[in-house]
Image 1: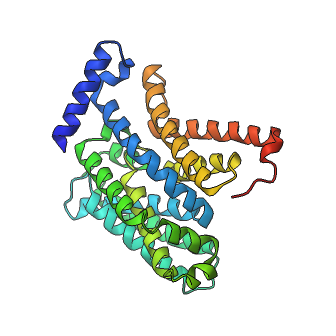
Image 2 (image 1 turned 90 degrees about the horizontal axis):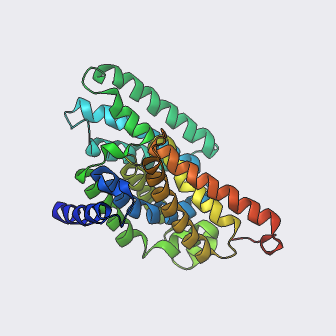
Image 3 (image 1 turned 90 degrees about the vertical axis):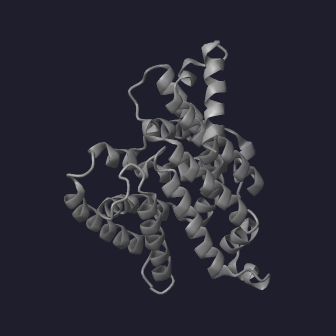
Length: 301
């Protein structure tokens, strides 16, 4: 797999040297980030549509922030502080599944319960960071919080590719069932959909994608990139297939432009922030289109 990455890099760098591609393509870390963008755009677009429909935006943010605690745990148990994926995936999955389990067995409002879990997770993470602060560079935590293309390497790309394949193989065959369970649980149950099982499966998929995307977008902004493209697509679409397709295109476009434009024009903007700003601009444009066109008035998905 690493040889495939090397081949792609060499070809793109050769095209950039010949003036056929923009100058940023001469840099390996830019190519790495763009390869990741080609994966996370479709992932976040498809999952983001479902997150919006299921009203789980705050849930995804809590999982992203829980990754900081996972990093601290990973350093304590001896994992590489640059790629503590075992601890991040392990802790975030435990966090998400425990939260989902508790949601189904309490009368507390979802936002209240998520706030409680998030507060506990951040408190544990802050306490653990006191013990590991002498072992890691503060830039490691910054890359988790805000994302950094400079930190993306072949390991990160392999993890992201693995998560993408897992989501495609597991999530796509069950996508209609998960969607029906979100829109009409009674009908889904009548059609034999295991509602509780698909809910837990969706939580696992959101958690895996969130953790895999941290190096590019960051924990603080991964929720925004899950939600904004879907919200922008919702402004100008009348159908569910149109919503999902347009959300994928907007998410991918935001990732690519957010990576290339700051590099091309030497703008001092963090990559994760630039990606979300591009998505936000698209959202504003679609909002104006919806407000000014009678075609989309009253449209619903």
